[in-house]
Amino acid sequence: MLIYLESLGCARNQVDSETMLAQLRLADMQTTDDPARADAIVVNTCSFIQAAADESIDAILNLARHKKEGRCRRLIVAGCLPERYRQEIVAALPEVDVFLGTGAYDRVVAAVRGGMASGACLLPDPDAIDTGRPVSRRPLTAHAAYLKIAEGCSRHCTYCIIPKLRGRQKSRPMQTILGEARELIDAGVRELTLVAQESTAYGHDLAPPGNLAELLRALAGLDSQVWVRVMYGHPESLAPETIQALAEHPNLCPYLDLPIQHASESVLRRMGRRYNDQSLLRLFEGLRAKVPGIALRTTVLVGFPGESEADFEQLKAFIAKVRFDHLGVFAYSDAEDLPAHGLAGHVPAKLAQARVDELMAVQRDISAENLTRYLGQTLTVLVEERQEDDFWMGRSIYQGPEVDGVTFIRPCAAAPLAVGAKVLVRVVECMDYDLIGEAL
Image (cartoon, rainbow, N blue to C red; front, side, top):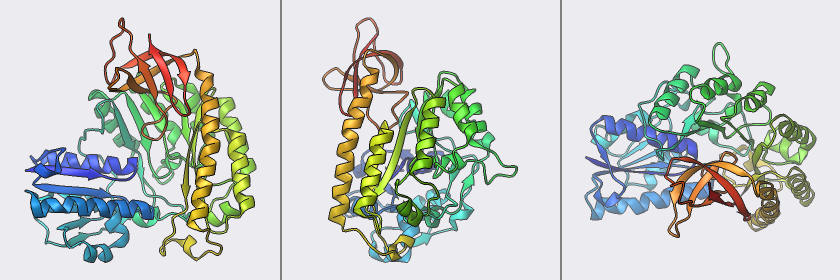
């Protein structure tokens, strides 16, 4: 049986998709990159914001045509969309044979084989998700992999649906994570990117409690040539021990992703976040002092209910002052099942998008200027792709996968390049978000 799986959404979803594919392969099924050849199609969906839900529905309807026109006999929809909308989405998509919520990924083989009734919607309690050792999986690329260290979130941010979709935080045991990391490294992975809803809170829910610093040190010791990167942290749970660990180990990337969401204290308070711009400034100044050269990434949310022009100007001034290396900007996406839906002062969508565009224009200039510090430097770059014009593309230790800029590499006859290799590159040119260098 041939299976096609389409994965939508974030890196955490990508890990879930890879795990489902591993389960299907263990059941003697093969995978294909062509949905027209598939006997069964699985769509792992996202519904974090309305645009993601719309994208998921469009993908499902587009792939459903293979049931009418092609060889596909089973269409399975998994993940956040059925978990969030439940019977509403079941009624709206009769083309789908089985719906699997975020706590039901382990039932994908039965769903594909037809061992579940048509139209079934399996939605276990997300808090019951098994966080034990997954089946061996193949990462998105042969040289880089996301490593999920926890599931769910125990916070109650008013703009976020994740606790409803994924349940409370459930950290995976450290030995389980290390075992999976060893398998990935043995398979040739040269970079591990740690993901969770709140990676910096790792281990707080374990008995006895654990912490991210201990996990990072253990991962760093597996192979000194493998980079370990931290994504999706939280300013409130970033411990001094974690910062110290980043400073101690060369293969722990001097890079940290800490979404702050805003800088206005009044907006942050309505969001359910308990810090302000001054505490954030102290945090980022301390990070740069203790981890020299660290690349800082953050995400902010504009257009949140009640965000005034003064609030937005405060955020813009904060971005200009901190000068993040990487920045993601999103407009608030409202929904009736969000706590923030009932707040006063909803910002018109057109104004929210204008604020997104304005912040990104500020960040473009900041990024272009920040990148000039690498001119003339020699960086180690993980090669990821060969371009048509004989350039190669990769990422330095300061660039995260999929969300940041990249490094374009001019090849050197004396040093042949290959995907998955780490090469020395002298930076000779900077663009707004990307670097250009020559292989040495």
